[in-house]
Length: 79
Image (cartoon, rainbow, N blue to C red; front, side):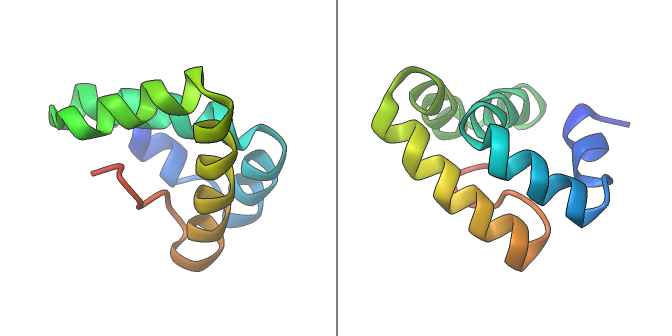
């Protein structure tokens, strides 16, 4: 099982709690790992920007929290 699939298989409430407290870090790492699985350069760039910049971190935190609640997985720029 791939690392992103293991994260996606967690219960929804656990992912929402993790996303609420560690969202920016999880979003960046998730996208970088997703890049290694799918080789999509945009996903890598967004993952690095999420980890390095404060604005990217805050935006990713909000967007990822909303997508976790609605879709039960991180979907925006993570494909």
